[in-house]
Length: 352
Image 1 (cartoon, one colour):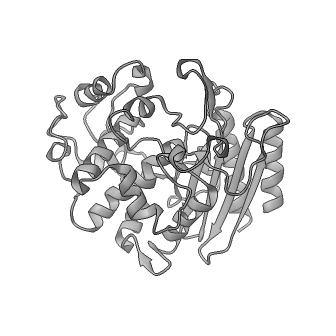
Image 2 (cartoon, rainbow, N blue to C red):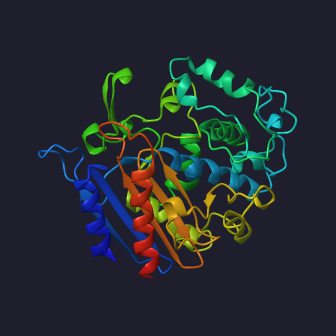
């Protein structure tokens, strides 16, 4: 399996899909391996990738830690899936304000029909106002629509219940106890810029983006608030620790993080009524990046920079892909990186 993953990674680097990639696999029994490949950039003199190289994991942030913190609150009875958003974020005020529930945030079923990146030249307050006031194209819960805005709202809910910012909550409840020592919202406070893989050369950001969140709206909003949609930087070993906890039914090194019921809901389709797939807080059964052997209980999350975390508890395996497919510039669509992701998934699931 390792050799096949290495070959596929090297082939993709030659095809210029990304310069840097690290893939890790963890089993329920704790065994794991990591295959690092490539360099920080396509420059021959660039730094080589190590097993524990730090990447911007982009929208994996939505699940680790944002949704996971919400699931923890649900586990503790401090939050319910049918609670109203406005109970916690009263400034949300579009015409559906009475109808938006926590379960809509955890399943990405708010039909905003916009991309927040289009508002990157606005101020943080203006961006938040767009999220609070924009009308939906359809009723909450009736359509799956993937957008950063939904996870930003969930992040605000989590912060207001815990009364602490997301970066501190992630550290306290998951990163520190799970020994995710290189996982943080603020990498440049802990690590040198040269230790972090660059994501893109962006003119509007003044050149190379390295060690600062790649996502446009998260970058602007960080002036005011840590958002739940993007911003985490991590490594393959750290994320394998998190997946190892999930594979162990919510426990790790003798500490319990989730109840069996929450683990069950993560793997259970919440969107049967609308003919879509989503677990509670995670994506579910997505062959476009989980490969042709994924099951109705395979759950995971991708990141725009070219990352993926995928877990299949029944098959006792989880895996992490970290890359910088947005370097030096982003691709016109996700077809190439999803082909790589699904090929890696196929290798793993076929060789269990």
